[in-house]
Length: 280
Image (cartoon, rainbow, N blue to C red; front, side, top):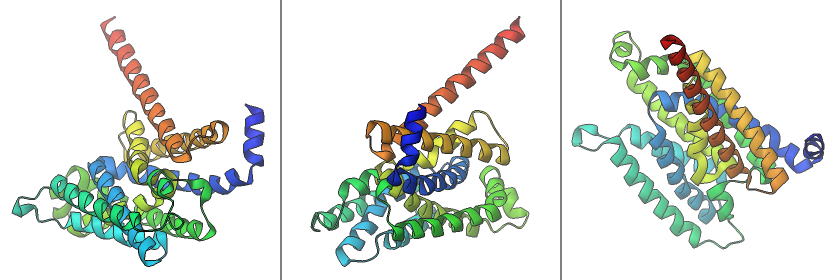
């Protein structure tokens, strides 16, 4: 194990990928608490897949990849927030329609591009090991904005998640905060694309908080546990990726899935022991 760690830290490629990966882990862990609280898991799937259209536009028009995809993902997320529910269109239905249409557009655009201009595998499944200096700058910029916004608005979002009526009565601009939350989901999705790709992004956005939800209930406790699970899963995934030559994004998501199973099993065991202790 020590030899593996020495080899890992001696690799320039892994060291270049380590800081962006851990930063993404902190951002997604923080955001996943709000995704779970507001039941937006399906939204993350829809926005991540819809972002393929933004990536396709960037490739076709020779635009900057991540900035173009960011604008498109935020636009899709805001359209979903503004979907007219009074007309009988549910959020799930709206997500499905935008998801399918944007995905179809992205596939058409990317299929018309030359293979030299697009790494389809990297877009679908992520590859943080190939992050460029320009990508790194954009990731740091987005991560900083998301974390600052979360620090300022997380308490309000937490209140809205459990009692929107009371939150609005107390003077909180619920509609505006909801739009901001959806837009932030779009930004975070693009952060995840470089690490886990379009297909696996939802795992990064849901699993850290899902692991933490079994143990904590306060906002601070959930955030701390979610961050610890996310950092641990990312670290284990990168080690697996290096040692076994697995895709980095898939390795990280698999590590988080295993952590969730272990967390669930441990929680079940604790509940079972306490139940037996009371009976005894």
